[in-house]
Length: 148
Image (cartoon, rainbow, N blue to C red; front, side, top):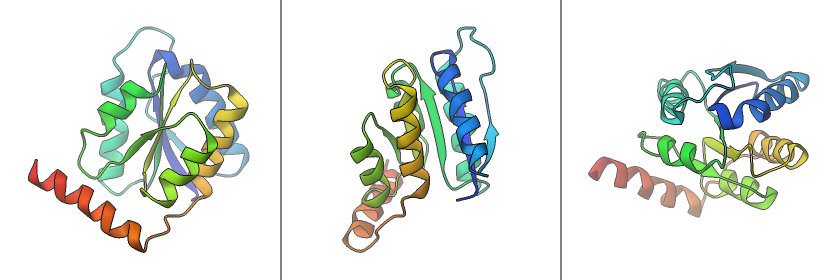
């Protein structure tokens, strides 16, 4: 993975900026869809901007950050083809890639510390989908999207 898209609301601004620095230090290109200030804003706008770029094929994976990660994950999962996972531990960050083929990691800037967040980002970026029996389950999720 050599490029990733990232976005946040005001509650995730500081963590988003640190994640960008971290990814860039590992020669991973980042596309920042905002927000860029600490002024109160609406997280669904940033989730939509990020998800549209994944849906278009421009990016394979993204990271969204808000206060808890929950709002961003709800908003992101409203978009077809997006499998967003709100994580607060490294095991979940790894397994959501391996078993769920998650393409968006959602983090809470007010929930997880910087060190843990960067560990989860690394796992999300570096871990590949296992496929196999998990492919059928991911396909079932796509079928649910079609039906709804």
